Amino acid sequence: MPPAWPSPGATVTTFWGCSQPTSRNEKALTRNLTNSEHQWLRVRQHLREHRYDLAVSAAGGYPESATVEATPLLSAPTWLPDIPIALDYIKLQYTPEATFGGITGTEPVIRRLLPIRVNGVRYRTYSEAVAALAAPRIFENRATYRLLHADLRTNPHMVFGAGSYFDGIDIGDAAAHEFTGVHLGEIARPDLRTAIGDPCDPARRATNVALSTLTFRHDRTTGTATFPLQLRDSAKVGHAGGLYQVLPVGVFQPAGEELWNAENDFSLWRCIVRELAEELRGTTEDYGTDRGPINYGAWPFA
Image (cartoon, rainbow, N blue to C red):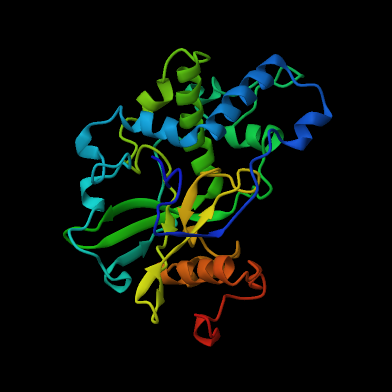
């Protein structure tokens, strides 16, 4: 599903400009690539350059009832509340011991999409291929809160388990790669998309959540309001590169890998406030969480 618009509208301010994507990971240029790796990179590059149009085309393959308000965004009916909901009204439940029985990213239906190295061994996962051939500047497999269930209509609540950032790369990016390959005639059939079925079913694919926050700036003198957008740099980010997106936005995840952060940071607002600090104030992402959890109550910005 497309997470952002291809260009800003007349009422927005582009606050965060980034450079254009690079053509290829520099590490991949230090050695000879196999024909398989070259083919994978061609498809990957086309995906990066035409992500929005491909996403709109992909959304067209699903029933109109699955789309959101005449946009190409896809959603489950229970994810769309009738009226806005205050964050405090959404009950969160964290079950890190929850198991997952859906597609994990190592199945043959995904392996067939991965290139073969010079030693004849196929890459094990899509994220492994990205890391070796087309890694953005920041590409780390950090802990996330993986969505298990959500209902924002009748009894607003969300249930999460333990996940990792590469869960989304290994399945979501692989599905996007497959769709692009079919579009280019490089791949015969969308077998992975067929295997996933409903893309909004967290039981079928490991689902990470990103919190996109529309931040308004009210000018009291003129009575007008603007909001910032960021242009996501494909050379720096692993998702939605080359697209405009609201500011701030960030994956729902703990601030650090230590266990004490998982419970302490399990809050929609705490995730948003960290992203506000990082993307609007330029605050570092190093919160010293290796020494202890963030004391949000003592942090003036929080």
